[in-house]
Image (cartoon, rainbow, N blue to C red):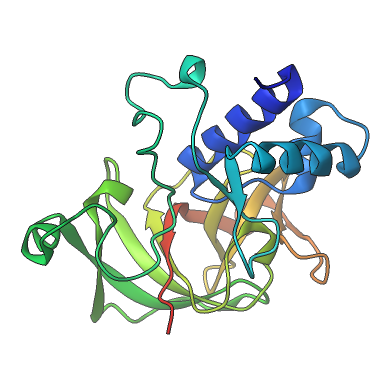
Length: 233
């Protein structure tokens, strides 16, 4: 039996993972639940972990995986308890795919445009020659492409150097979503979008990096994050 705050946090983490592909930061969870300190979030996460509802992913700062949901919170389109799959794919065939031949039919080839900085912005991406195979279940409607992450500024959002991020092509995004932003038509970067009045802030998920603020005419949204793939060596 979950307390009201435990239930609220579990649903919020699940919905954020479904929407953005990565778990929310402690600050975002604190704000969403209207708590005064991160220590309250830590206690809630620990309680949910002890009850088997979430799992903290090893070697990933503040990254969470939802293992199950209370029956009352599972919408009709969500897999039943025990079959929920996280958004992160860790290489190989998708879980439950069985025969690799069947799994191959469920894979989609996306253009891999090259590396994108999760740190200091890099030159706009030019390489359109490579492709990467990803599970079709990670993708919804629309056009998608993939990028390889370079840098560590998004580690607290669960995005590590070397990860392959899956991007849904779009030119708008909601406040707080992780996006591919093109700065001054030549620098591409992966950051969380924050709008502050008429300005656009590109926010890192690592305290070692400063938030960069631009005028609206300097930033174009190229897509938003919908998932990531990690290959373990």
